[in-house]
Image 1 (spheres, protein in one colour):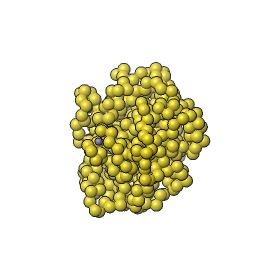
Image 2 (tube, helix red, strand yellow; image 1 turned 180 degrees about the horizontal axis):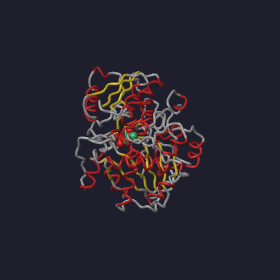
Image 3 (cartoon, rainbow, N blue to C red; image 1 turned 90 degrees about the vertical axis):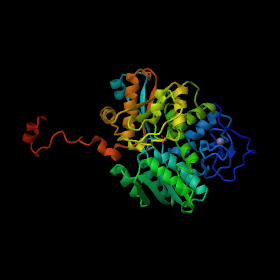
Image 4 (cartoon, rainbow, N blue to C red; image 1 turned 60 degrees about the vertical axis):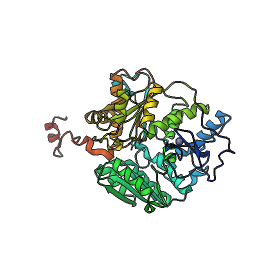
Length: 428
Ligand SMILES: *Cc1c(COP(=O)(O)O)cnc(C)c1O
Ligand SMILES: [Zn+2]
């Protein structure tokens, strides 16, 4: 449960990224200096940020956070960003609503309290604004001039918008078959948008090649060479959920999984809050949600495997359609260690769940939100999630971006503008 802390003398950073002091390998623990790298020079394991986090009085830190801006920068002391980050040009995402979902709870038989963390309220209407905001600070610090990414859709829009605001050139890569809403969102901010004939996994491979080529010089790929920084943005979901609950841990959280980065870092954020004394320690369970048409982690979980075998995605939940998830093994470990589970739902169940959430709580989720709410329902049916425990479910994107999923939803009737016609339609 220890927060990573180091003696400052051992890792004296040459850049100002606040409390971040070094990169640390998740597999072998080897340290390397803060820089635009993502793989351990010793063992090729994934790199994470190591911090010198504030020690001392948790009450003072809590007060400092509460007095901060109503966006993710209130947590700047816990993130790899310069202390004056809130005054730099950016989209300032976060502090989205934690909605108490009593109607949905009643419908599903949840008695312990159910909340939706609704990240559709971010500037480009998905959780991706959080991770991009951190990556922008790293890009600025390391002197990159072009912001880039491989995207399943939402990331492209988040990078385009953040680049526009912060004054970077942007060039983002997407699979050619994305939803119209996501393509428009990615293009409208004026950066370059390149559609690639292939799956997300093909796009990602292409970007890795580009980074190794002179053509990619000066390019910050938020989710590749800036990935250790990018990933830390997901911790703010953990921080916000706990602060919005009154500085308390929830008992259970249902989180969508594409690469698994978000889930892994929410767990990291919860552990940091405990270690810092900002919340009281108690067990919490983390549940991972996938669409059956791209469920390599759920398949491994159910088979009792530790390795995740890649799949070819085929699902309407395109934002989660990563067939070869980089953080898959860590998701398995976290679900098993915390007593959670990994579950998946069919596309039909995703659509049902989108409508269920809209009908009960007035929240129109994108397909990823249909995945988490659908998985919540399935976990309850299977007896894997405790209905008497306090539960938080993530909605990570906006339904307006995935309208096709609910195509066929439309007017109850089409009438002439007369009362007679209204009566004829049986609506009076
Ligand atoms: C990217 C994304 C996620 C999570 O992605 P990870 O790669 O697992 O971090 C979840 N929901 C939506 C809508 C997304 O766009
Ligand atoms: Zn290593």
